[in-house]
Length: 169
Image (cartoon, rainbow, N blue to C red):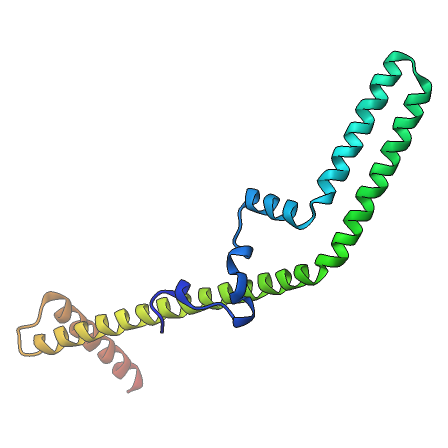
């Protein structure tokens, strides 16, 4: 097994632009502005029209106020149209991004499962080594004089056998 689970290569369909998917918030905002530059333009035009309408309302110029409100309406319609067009254009990319997230989640789950299995194997090896050490100690002690614990265990077993044999007779 690979000692470093993070060094595994990504699937080939995602190799072309893997930094694209590992971006922070500011990188995402910058990318979205580059992808759909007309949306911020539409938002800016809407704000400009609202500010113009507010100024003309303060002056009492009803004709210009109505004109700015119409411009606001057109700017908002433009922004919505650009959003819909951009959504249709980038839909393929968004589905690819979802596939990537799903593949990454599956890979993380597999890595987690592999780490768990490795940990279980290590624990099993430690337990086997411990049992082997205990067996070696027991084998070494068979030639040595018995300790108090072993003598008590033997005496207890003899008494149990005596009681059981006494009941069977």
